Image (spheres, one colour):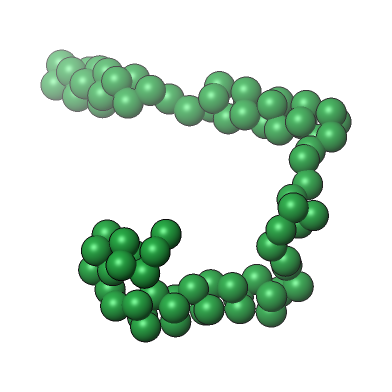
Length: 81
């Protein structure tokens, strides 16, 4: 993205954009992380399977908002009797 485009899109000056860019690059470097093609790792089959199972378990625990409303309504009507 060009500096003019950055300035237009997020309404900051080129100097501020450069300062933000340098700050963003310095943070992972301090933690020992690097950018580039070698810095990304794909999960192996075992890790992918564990992540899928965790997602399924999470979906099973999450209630739909209408379930909460129905339960509150039922509690309210039960206590009114």
